Image (cartoon, rainbow, N blue to C red):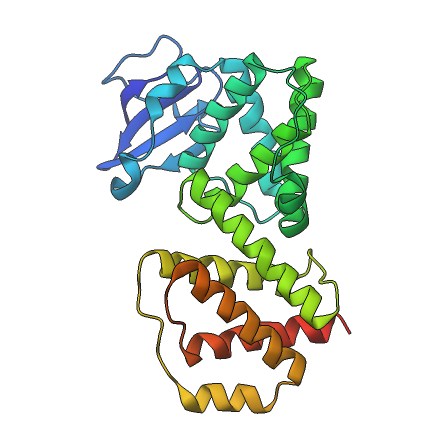
Length: 276
């Protein structure tokens, strides 16, 4: 395993059997130069660098980030990954480190994040993970990163799972929030935001919107599937589905066919059932 580039004492870019990888570990890059062998005993974390995403990740930014911050964030993320199913990609890690480095240098601004309550409501699990990160950093470095940064970190976590920009994530979050409002207002119930069915529903909406943004054809009219689901759904599900579809079609200026309507009804039935 050869070193391609040492970024600092604790992060290097290496090559192993033709595959580029980012390695993190205390002292793994100390005094090292390009072409030298990697000390595998110092590897704490390995990230495979996919060729199709390499150009989207600015690894050079690691040169200017405090090494103590890198090690502490990596330690926190390892703890989170062990206690949850969350896995941060190398792109997500670099983006998060870049943000936190800037936030720490500019701490003290007491302002409200415009999406704080929306993120906290729609993504309670990501918000809680972000709170753990911010609290741990505050305790470790005796600093004061506020609730604004909890929301910002949560958005990085949300973005990590959907391969989109932070601006796209914020726009998507607003659309999903309005969709949730439609469901809870029309159905007259409050969803359990920490349930598996809720998480799966939000993920489905994410990918549906991604397809709409990419102008994929989702106008498929599967009458058999739609009629089967429609017949076993009640009037609340019918009305809620129609309102969400109407809203999404207005937002994206695209027709949504019966197949997608059927899948939406399936999720809504599960959400309604668990909240009775």
